[in-house]
Length: 397
Image (cartoon, rainbow, N blue to C red; front, side, top):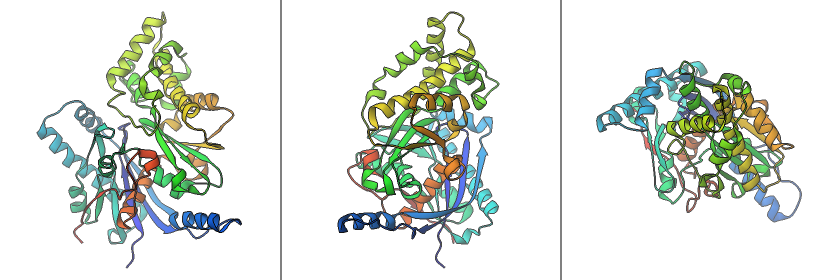
């Protein structure tokens, strides 16, 4: 029996937990080339043939326990070989549990799943040089009996790319429109994909804009240890940003560097967040906790807006925002104000729950691997060319 159902698993830089989805893919048949030259019609037909329709059968999130999150966070800064080894297997088990739960929710038999695509957890990412994601795929394959495709980033890095962002292939093949569209993910790190009309891959560009919510979260946890994040942006709304601090931070060379580019917790560390708070207190007498949190929020918003001004010359008509940061009302309001009159909408207003978007992308990357098709967008990552991404761990069936 031909299987067209895939599971996608994602654990991002925010370390909130594991997102899991079950998706059925099929080739799109509703795109017809518009009238014009034969070359234009052939180009549009090629785009249509490469795109997919999809049905999101189920989506689930499994929040990390404080102990799990602390183990992952600690591994990003220090650890022994034994600790890394054990954590890789432990995370594989957590990922397997998440996949099993979402399959039950979808009512889909394991025998009907073509493969599981898992991003794993990034412990270290050094663009163009090396990247490291853990979450033992053999544990997932052994527990569920399903083929697992993992370790997607390394082939792009080996080909001279950044290994990030990888979601642009899904942005183009699944979420394009008849006009230029930007898809802004605001996870731990912010990244934007620019998609041309019809999703032609040669016109897709993407890059990391800078911090998403990871600096905000780190400042909140530093100042309010009883909290994990600024729910709905309530603390930021009660404060006033220290603009001079944001100006200083935006002077870092990363923000002025031209794409392709990527970043992560290697730059935006807990120490980075602590320095932000220190500078706020040095430059503003009586700086409140809320002021510092508002400053971190402003940093994320201004870095996104600055990236748009510097690096997005395309005639974009709308921005679709997704990720945990899109639920931060203060952050979203700042972004909307800074990029006006460009319209910013929530991804879920057009498609589905934005929290599922990256998991769906890794399900698609697994399908592309199974189909023998490239999963990277060289215009986004800077790789030498299109590459099939991922490594296969066969299941037991």
